[in-house]
Image (tube, rainbow, N blue to C red; front, side):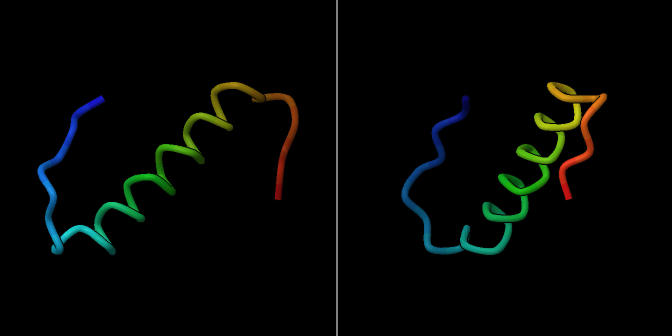
Length: 36
């Protein structure tokens, strides 16, 4: 995990990154179950 310095330019980019990471993790962890 990379620790980003305290920055106020992160809200959208960081949220988007987390969202994509979570979706990717769920897809990799449960390939047989589709979670809407």
